Structure formats: C-alpha cells, structure tokens
Length: 111
Length: 153
Image (tube, rainbow over all chains, first blue to last red; front, side, top):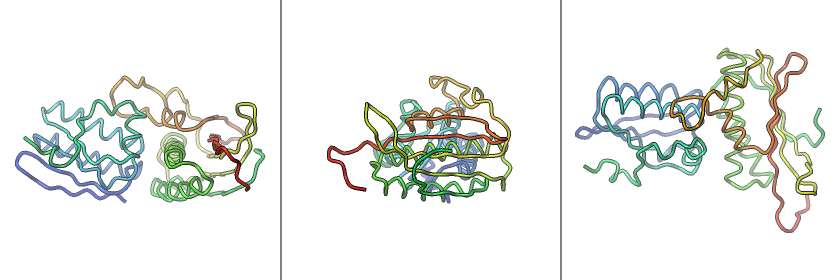
C-alpha cells in the first residue's frame, strides 16, 4: 500500500512517499503530483522516496508526467532518497539524467 | 511443456492489488535459489511488468480474469556448459496483444509509458511470447550464474 503525506514549507511542498509504486498505486501518486503542480502551482515539489522500496514502469511514467507538468507551469520537481531499486529502474529507463536528484532533504529544499 | 523441476505454481486473478503478493513471493523464491540481490530485483521487475501488461492490455483492465504463473528450475546450455536457470511462464486467456504497441517509443523520447517491455527484455536472459490454444504465453528465463565451485543441490 502506498502512503503519501505532505509537508509545506515556504514555496515548497515535500511529499513523503512510502510503499511500493505499481499499477495499483501509481494513479494515486500521479493524482497528488499533478494536483500539487497543475492546480496549486507550488513553485517547488520535493519527493521524499526514502521509504519507497519498489517502482515499476507506471511509477516512472507518473514521475515523467510530474516532470512535464512542472516544466509546463515553471515549477521544480526534485527527488531524493532513491533506493537501489528505484535508482536501477530509472537507470534502466535511461531517464535518471532528466530528473533533478538531491542527496538529502536539506539539499532538496535549499534555496 | 517445459522440462525441469516445478518450484511454484500460482493461479492469480487480474487484479492489480495482487501484484505486491507476487513480488514478495518471487523475491523470496529468487533469493532462495541463490540469485544475487540485484538479479532478484530484476526478476521481480520483469514478472511484475509482464503481469501488468496482461492486466492492462490482454484483459484491458478487467479484474478477476485468470492468470497462471509457473516457476521451474531448468538447465540451459550456456557458454558450452549446462547452467541452472529460473524459468517463469505466465499464461492468460485475454486478447492477443500487438507487441509493437507495447514498445511504442524510443527511450530517448521522454514521455510516460512504453517502458514495460523494455524492462522485461533488459532484466531477463530469454523472453518469448506465443499464442497457443487460445492462450497468451510469455516465457522468461534468468540464468543462475554458478559460483566458481559448484554447490551440491
């Protein structure tokens, strides 16, 4: 089961995500991400993936969609806390380089 | 019918909620067989993506449709010698899927979707699709690379 909770800082929302991202759960991630970017126009959305132990191609697709939305509205989408499994899947998709990836939460929210 | 020793057989339904159960079971199985951690993750990813394709494309999102998953330990000829491998066969009774549509984009094209089949092919040593007796079948094999000194089984 995927859990997503939000923390709000000034001009930044951190989404703490835990669980597996797959066909069953990726629609929820997509919905939350697109709401934050397209509807709320949050200037910076940070995804904390520390507690995500698995993602499939539908999870990658949700992240790509979020990235495109962030570009459309002039926001930033930053990821941090990638596990080996998540990093491997992004590498396999050859999409790792297109994302802004921080080493830590401090770096992700730094001005 | 494949030869080899049957390890596990699962009769599944095309419900996305069951994917995590399959992943957890398969991760245990691959680990027990001696696959390294990264290869366990690759096997799990391939099977998860193959099941996702069945649910989304063969059954077009309909739940409660049958999927049969069979896991066998087989021997394959590789580099001039016999090596142990994990064979996974998934069968469904859905419509035939045009695989061109499953792999409908180049990797350089940054957009959502079209990655599942790429993940399957990259993760496994052999991937074969066929339609037989009204069923779709995907067969995947991952070779277990033997350590320097062979362990007794």
